[in-house]
Length: 247
Image: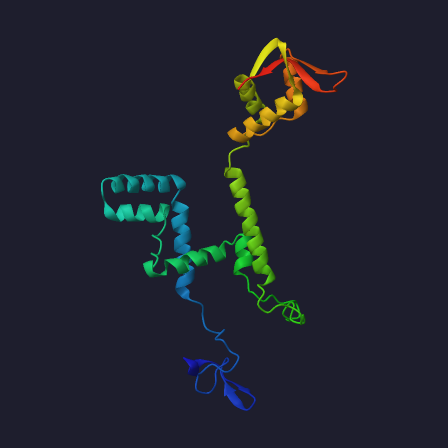
């Protein structure tokens, strides 16, 4: 075929349409004079004719038929249906390399802590010099900064988780209500010094593990329940009239 191509003289060498005298392609010629694949255009015409004849309704009809025979146990139809809906089955993981696979997944989807923990211990600046390399007073045994940050973030995350999981603190008002119900008796003829009342109340809170309610809230509660807070004119001792402390 090469002998039928028209010849021309190029640099003292006989060349036929980019070929040498032996019919081989010369340097720099990728075979551009070769005819295109005659079947590619024909296949494109056939595919266009097929797509022109097939409508979405035809595809739905075929799919319904595939689903129908797949339900009857036709294995090729079942395989075709599953491959086009669920896709090909995943590649099984080697049981001996589960740790490697888990680490690879973590590195591909790192969190902030993972980014700090999995990063190189020696960071480099844009010029390629290790950070801190010129610090002569740096401790060679000290952990890198990224590791310290990772530890700090991990401790903060654990503390936040523990705080969220811990029960809410007890209500001091509820503890005072329980103390008043068990240790106080309302009597218009009785009176108790405020100091003695609070000492008894503080001891009760310590033995029952309850927080102490503020003094002003305690006095406001007693006043709302009919007691009166008075201060002696001579002794200047504040007392609650109408309340008696009982054991």
